Length: 357
Image (cartoon, rainbow, N blue to C red; front, side, top):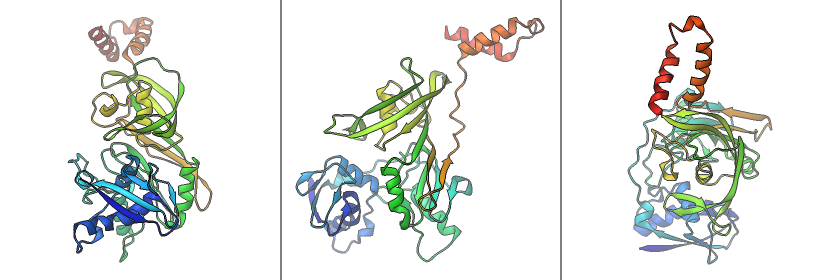
């Protein structure tokens, strides 16, 4: 059963920020007068999904924009099916320990880390799931113990299944500046993906459309009125074989930050990512999408930073056997001394080539 929760804004705020502050208390009070709000941890991602799903109204009108600015006196209504809202399926998160090698960059204002695949960025609704945000807090607390845990601000997110670079702030003083860098597209984000091509593609291409939720946990192209504008530029870096399939290594540069944006855009162009079965990709041991780098001016010093999260070793394409075979045949037959003892790679490729015919 869907219950209504009513809130009033007492100051200038973002919609998601207001709900993040007031919703846990409202949920606690609806259960029992003695339950503390801290027992109802509502993640930022859960609040964003609630808003994007159209389950929040501002002054009586549906609003799907988490960053919507509301002013003092605005009324906000959240429509929540508590059974679904608190449900969380069993996860297959990895066991992860924070180490010095995970930290890519750190100063007094920022800490940038390399998140592994299959590990959440932040806490979930149940409040008992290991996540990168809390790992960073624990790491900083261990380095410099204090009575209260250190502040760590979430500036952006990676999907649980995506690996790579993730930025947090260490002081609230730089949050506004960092938020502006993301909102104004001053931060350049670069990703790598391994995809399955269904047709020949140009070396570079772009996808611009509107993305919205089309099913539970799934996003896709929608009309302008139903979604948010999304733009990604792509470059094909290499062609080869991966897990026995024809594959491409692609660079992706998202100019906007929508949920599943790169995954949706690649699937739309007939290039689903390996491991992304939700969007038509081939089954694999992980989602082959990696956040490679962030480039931006430091919020305090204005010094240009470019931080890179090394590409995992699994992101390696083998040269297409047909091309390798042609090259080795030419080299082999041009060398009389090699005729009696052909190189092993040459013989292996011939066998594989014949098996694939």
